[in-house]
Length: 233
Image (cartoon, rainbow, N blue to C red; front, side):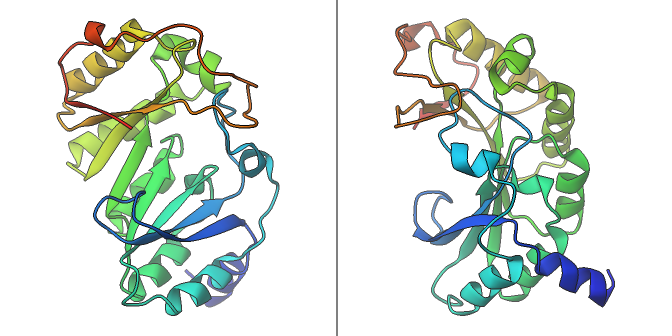
């Protein structure tokens, strides 16, 4: 990458916000979270509404790098989240983060396959949390996008590469029932995924994209198959 391109890239104000410290988002690692503006999905349950619809950010990559220089030997890792971080040009940013000695975790919906693949092939990512939004039949209904095939390609690539990642699903039981979760688990195991499967239960907040409230339908965990080890969050 040319110096001019790198400078222009690192000067872009695409970061909505920064959480300067967390011990929850990257297991066993003290981290910060970089929240990227914008997303290519409109998931009904998403409570990061302001981030998803943001056209630009408050901070540039360079601003975050300046912060990270003050956290060397204090933090262990950087979590790239959003929004959808993989929609942005991450290579120059991740190279600089790695130069500072941090690990990098990416939270992603997996729909920008080429970008994720490049980051992995350049050894710029240490861990990925991949959102499995819904079975194919319900994917568009919940995400308001037609990107299941792109997500599927990323999932297959991560499994084939034996990359360190987790699959996770946000559960609102008016949108997904136990049959849907069982279908997701069956699909994961058929592809060769054998790690823990994380289910994040919907938390009602003041606002979310679909104006959803707490689910009316009960979710009976007893009907879940034992294809994978399930961890509820």
